Length: 140
Image 1 (cartoon, helix red, strand yellow):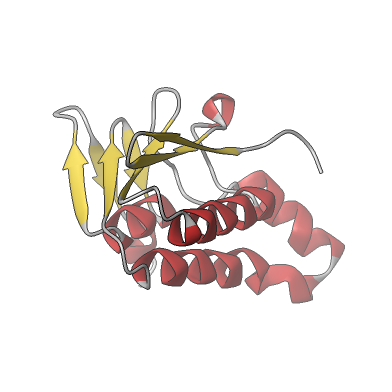
Image 2 (cartoon, one colour):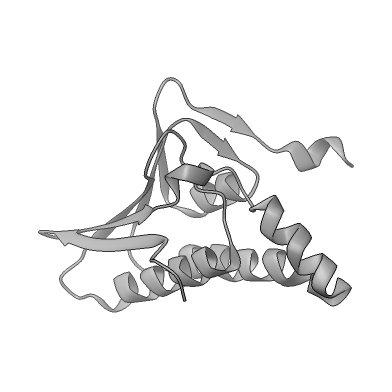
């Protein structure tokens, strides 16, 4: 597995979970979603952490699925079409089911799956410059 795409650290009673693919505007790969799910589980079991902040490194919070990876997965095997959405929903469910509060601190582009991750948190705090978008809605 390549370098970590999600960082987990704790400052006092606050867990900070950071999406860390700034070169790709934090677009989500399967690896990144798996790591985010693991970070959420880690927070859930971390008795010293009372609240978590989910944020993104770089100029955007998260721009949804990494379309390059999605196309690659589909070209390998059409059965992979649902791999990214399946993992994405598992991640959203993990955030949603937490017994402890989560805060999404968003900025830049917060798009598609990134918007779902933010909305799964108990509270969303957005920078004034944040651009929210759900382009899938245009498809129908």
